Length: 263
Image (cartoon, rainbow, N blue to C red; front, top):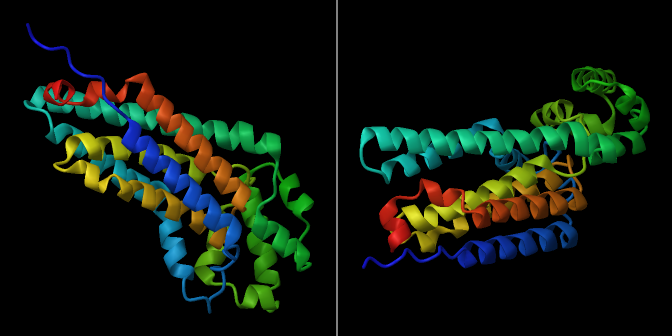
């Protein structure tokens, strides 16, 4: 009689997620990270901007495609590979898009927390945060902020502002709490960690990689001044919890090869 497949343990993933969350939180709240990468003369500005952007469309999209290719490569037969790849990619898109929409159009407007860089500009006398957020659409707020920065180009804060960071600020004029980048990064790290553990040879040795990436994305948001430590802490926590719930639901088990489930 054939042995029943053993239940898949997620303990390794949960441990990595917990450690990554704790380290991220401690660094964000303890170290002088806030606004450490927004000036042109700050050496790590472009590094943190690159890490931050890797948590947006091009970075997450590339990681999704690689993860999908990994899923497909571990199955035999064109039909099975195609079906599993579509199943995984579509499911991941639905989850990430749903969470992003809820965060952007429900949670953030409900809390209505102002971005740290908006408060910094207000403190410098360059704008009124209430006036900025009174504008209903992000395109209008982006145009408003760009105009303010252009009209005050000789102000010390604006003069030393890195041009790429200035554009980054202009494109992120939504509300601040919680951090969507952090939420998606930790959720995706849990899923990637699961795939790496079960689909790569000696995958257990490399589970830490997606969590290091997720932590970097969280910390970059603070360094650039687009989120507070509280924003990224709550975002990382909710993302990690949601990812863990997906693992415990058994949905990801369906994209594993049968031989893996029987090991």
